[in-house]
Length: 627
Image (cartoon, rainbow, N blue to C red; front, side, top):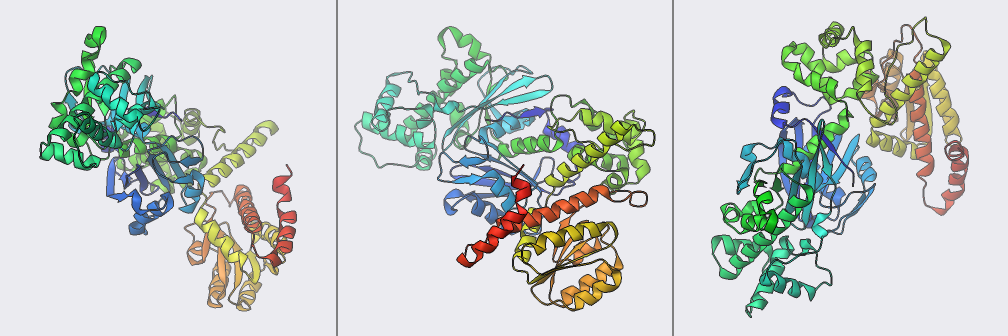
């Protein structure tokens, strides 16, 4: 199971300093258990809106579940999401333990057009929420005082029994991946031994989760009834809880008493195993519902009943997490850390957080952009950074100087070294006195950096729509001018090999004439670095009026993008007045390749299409497979 780090302890302080919304729009968060799934949109750090609880039984899988929640938010553009799930998470394929659902994380990401989708274990998320909880978010049970920067344990009975922990590091905590709920159940008295014997009739191996969980409550109830030779109707966990808490029914009360005692013993075992002087926290869907009944139960006395180690455990505080939906804070923290890309040396990010109140309102917007999208800032020129932050370029420079740097380039150099990744993401300006080695390295690094950023921001839904239009196209025409003509010519050569009639126009006088001859079912692919050329915009209007579809490869906020049927965005900013658009051209060529390969592998299944499909594959995939 993957580890996650949390740098910085307090969400409340973070939220105070960052009251503005995320620049990338709201983030989708979820806590998906075996019984219920809880969703929210995080609109700003710690601000959870549109919270909704769905019953998992009402859906056939995770995709219909997510779609049901998003149905009420179709106007929201969601780019990033993180889900906590009651299941081990190891790799792309997820098969839920307590529900017959299986899915691919990448397939779900593509289905909803997300840039980022993180799936983590629900108790990893719960553990990540702990450093940000306030005194009002928990109820302390028994004595003990938490020791700062010490190990913390967390557990919670629900449909299963989740277990995790937090290990302190120099700059935060690391979560402990664990399936501790599946250790053998150990009875502590004759009553519990009788319950274990009853459970052995159903399972040869009885884990702790079999008893300290919702289904475990039901089993304990039946076992105690058998022990007392009582004939009772099988009750659900909810019915047992209600009968004990509201009706004081004796057998249900004894069931809860036994359950709380077992939980105390298990929590003590976790505490001594981890050395959890930071405390033991209890979440899940059962214990928080008990309220004061749990505080008065056998839990704490059993927790400290450890013979020679009783005094050791008496020092460790135990808490019940009472705040609603604590996992939201955990997945929010995990997603934020992922998007920042930070690990280890995060001092520069911390400095930016700390000085925000000393900055001007405009400089704070630059700080917020950097904290939310650090890699984007590293990849972009000053003109794009100022546009994204909605400030002037001198404001960006003033911000950098407020941190002690001479300018943006100096800031980026230090900032890049504080972020980790498999490939460094950086943008370096080529200078006249650079050696051939230096300028070669800068050109390659800038291109690789732009491609990685481009990959992370691909609009998957838009690509799917474009491929669907091309698949049924009667004719495909390419319109482009200047430097983009080479891209259009490459596209014409590729699509002609699909046996699709194609044409390529680069003369401004011919665009409108060609567009007037189009018919419904035809597709025009327009390639433009600016998306503003009047000749192209006029031709697009004519093509759309003729019933054709238009695919634009252009900046996403350009006039061309707004007119087109589908926009495949290339948002890389370059100094076109001084240089040719080199990197933008490469990104445009990549989109042509993606469309071509996507069209070739998305093969029709009818018999009469197989020969044609074989031809497509032989021509298009050779460069991607023979490497």
